[in-house]
Every structure is written in structure tokens, then in C-alpha cells.
Image (cartoon, rainbow, N blue to C red; front, side, top):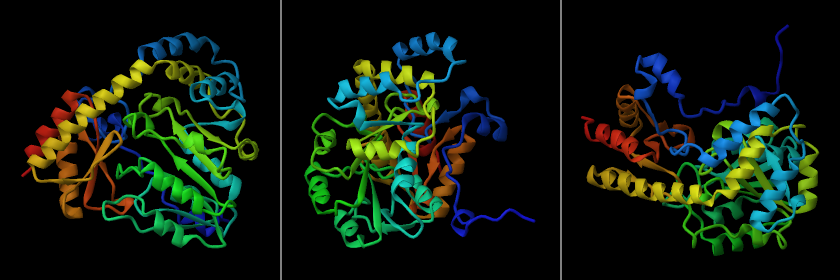
Length: 366
């Protein structure tokens, strides 16, 4: 007898990440060292040298279970952002935080609101529980239309996902608009504010959401060490919210969900402000570099506040022609048709020489 699963599981589409370098190397016969990956919004600087040192020193402890409560990492986060450790939950990447939030508040048939062009994981975690996703029509610039979010709220709504900046479009919601939106959301609805790219924002654009937690007990803020901190391979993120909410989420969290090396690396990364500043500066320069060539080539793009740019190639067939042209020349970018943007590709911002390689082959496409 075949194994049976709920219909909402069998209808799920698995998450598709940016293609790994080794996979492309095997498929196309291009040496791995000749391939440039600009598909997964990773930090091209890699990891901070200071963090690398503590990772090397921590290897001798991997036969031990990690601290399941993450005491020292929570302490480091709380000191960095003037929070209480009890307001913090750790995750196996910020994806884990998103899933934990969904598992805590959702039952089959409940409704979840997110933007039409939003991080694919929102839909996956919603459908995996048998809940129903409601997609808000975006603004003309592809950003979150918060008025449309409010229109979609019903008695069945239990969760709202908002990414700021948004992936894959790169849009940023003004703090005043976001705060006004929160004031209008019923207090029984959990709002998850996904801030995976906050470290790339200029000082005047940076989030102030941690300061809103005392008023909005239904707010959960998700952060990641995968982007500017360069720890994508270690899978480490965290969520911040009201103590009672965090206590509930902890009840569905897997034990030892954050490994020991990830914890010590994240602690050291929080201390290394210089590396984050360098990463942001490099990203700002790279963004200008890519925007210039898009304007030169008359390719429309969405101005981005993240470490990536999504650009429009008019139709899906032309988009895939560009994608294949880049791929056969060893440049991996990301098609985003699964985000309902079939004519777009998304390119992560790399080192200058990596951006140059991308630009060379964008210019050579015929």
C-alpha cells in the first residue's frame, strides 16, 4: 500500500535555492574555480577573519551536544540590541524562525497573508500546515501594499509575513508606514517582520522594530546571520518578541536546533562591527556598479535595499535565454518565476571582479 499524505503536502513545491557551484561544474564541465555564484545573496567576502579563528578553535568541541538554550548567544544578542534574553529564540537559520512561528499559531484552514512577490518560504510553511495563503497585490514598484494586507484580514487570519527589505524585489517599507500598519492589525494576529537584510541598510533606514515590542505583543522580528555576517553554511538566525510569545514558540522548537559552531561564530560575528561595515560598503559600491550597466543596457531593474538586484528582461523566454547564456559562461544567477516574476532574473552583488564577469556576459548577450 502506498504511503498517503494530506493533499496540501502532496501539492507543495519544494524550495529551490540558487544552484551550487559544484553542481554546475559537474553539469557543464567548467572548473569550480572558474564559476561565479551570484544566486543566493551570500556575502562574497566570506566570513570575518575573527569569526574564522573562533570556528577553528571550536572544532574540538563538536562531539558534545550544544547548549540547547543558547545562553551565551542570547546574552550577546541582548547586549547588542538592549533586549532581554527571554525575548530571544534561536533558529537553524531564520527560515527556522519562520516555520516555528507558523507551527505555533496555525491550524489547518487558518489564513496567512503575505505579498504576491515575497520570500517563497512563507507559502511553504503556510501550506505545510494546511493553512491558506492570501497574497496581497503589490504596489506598482513591486513593494508591499500594506493597505491590501489590511483588506485581506478576516476572522480566519492568524499570521502575517512581511519582509523588510523584501526578497526578491529589494523594496523597503518606510518605518512610519509600517508602524501605522501594526496599529491597525488586530492584536490576535501574529505579525512576523523578516529583517534578514537589515545589516545592509544605511543608518537612517535601519529598523527600529525592536523598540516597538513593548507596545506590540503580537510582533515577532526575525533576523539572520546568513547574509552580511557570512554564516549561511552554519544555519543560524534568531527571533525577537514578547517573552510570552517566545515561551510559546520554544515549545515547538526542536532540541539542539542550533549547533555549537554556529553559536560561537554568531557571538564573535556580533562583536565584529568592522566586518559588517566593510560588507555594507562593498555592497553599496557593487550595487552602483550593476545599476550603471543596467541603465547602459536599457534593462529595467527594481532599486534594491538588499545585497541583490532583480532585473526585467521583458518576457520569460528572453529571461531564460539570458540565464542560460550566463550559466554556460560560468555565471550563476537566479530565475525568479516561482516568485511570480517570470521575466526577471535576480543577481546577488559580488566582489568587483565577480560583478565584472557578470557585466561582461550581460553585455555580450546577442
